[in-house]
Amino acid sequence: MVDRAEYIAWEVHQLCEQRPAGLLSAQLLGAPRMRIGEDGEACECTDEGPPWEVALHITRPKEDGYYMRGGIKVRALLDESYPYSPPELNVMQIIHHFFLDNENGFPHAFYAMLADLIAESTPCLGVDEPRFSLRSTLQLLHYALASPLHPCEGCDAQFEVHKMMQRSRIATIDAYASLCKTPALFDAETGWRESWLHPLLREALHAADAPLALSAIIDEVAEEVFSFPLLSDDFCAALLSELDAYAASGLPTSRPNSMNKYGLILNEIGMEQMFDSLVERCLAHVARLCFPLEGGSIDRHHTFIVEYAAGKDLGLDMHTDNSDVTFNVCLGREFTGAGLTFCGDMGRPAHRHFTYCHKHVKGRCLVHLGRRRHGADDIATGERANLIVWCHNLTYRSSKSYLDLRHQRKYAREAAPPDKECLSYTHDKDFLLYKLPSVQHRKMVRRAWCPPVFARHLEDATDGSGQGDEDELDEEDYSLEDVRHSSSWGKGTRKRAWWGRR
Image: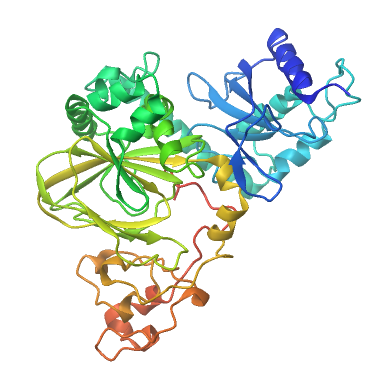
């Protein structure tokens, strides 16, 4: 039997030699950085595969598509059973599409349809009657991106809604291209400029032993919370000017995430590729050093700016991020207060126990796991803006450990009652047992899910006011309809992704 890697290399070559409509490029990248082992856990790839990764760059095969100008990047992951099992596909950039899941992957219906297609008859170099091929996969991929997989009244309507969202996004990016303050920030062809990085970081990245040099400038300010110099003062100033220019443009703005009301999603205004460059050249290296498992491979990012000031968000309730590794760097403006308080990791005994309070410094970046509970302290005076990069590792997100935590199948019991500074009004079922809500809290919507009943500490909770059970509180005062509502973190299997979808 022909070696699988050899067969895949031959198929990619044939695909490029006889390029189908809509294919810009195809490249066999070899084994990815990480894979899922026999135990279901993510681990480093130490050999040449399997699996094997093929990078596909596609564009519209006909004019009525709604693809991004410049095309769409797709990753095809092929395991040892290929071509008798289908490639696993993920779109590797932001796209609003009804049928894509949280990781921009395709649903079971896509692979079921693919299994029914007859692959083109080509010489197979010893692999008898391959059931799947990259060529047939591309054919269905173009169809799935442009048409509902399951045409019906409901699916057609939802497909059109997301299609309009995508077209609106493209229109906004195109419109701002002529209005932007600093065109260099949008010049994806040139990419990230060296001058935008902090001098110490530039020096470390160019050192003969870059990992060692990087380690030397990364400080562990608390357990598994790291800090390093990332951005130059000039870049911070340029990005803040761009933030102000976009605000003045009158173009639409989406909330940065489900909690922050003020800021800007940079991926939605044409800067996604620029931050792809930053991730590839710098952040991915730091992530692997700090968190070899969760940061072992950075595949996609959600990049945005958050703003804090009087009349805007003053602070941010305790929360965890929808990321595997988070980079958080202060861009500046003049302010006092507005520290960043850290507690423990979600699902661990010390999840809601205080660990560290960070004071922001312009250009300096914090790195932590997305599951680390943290919150922004209220700003006292002035304005603060921070650049946030949420990084996703697709392999880790398909691991047993990640899914067990996401679905609360493994969630350690709390070791003791929570520290009051670590409580979350929006997330914690038992918040009102320990604290009274502030005026700011009363403006928030509660989506309480934490902790799961089986993980709650064993002591009887009381805040000193005689309240022993949240259900006994005054419903009129505390809106218990919201308090009693709870939903498991990530419980839904068809939840829309966190960028721009409501």
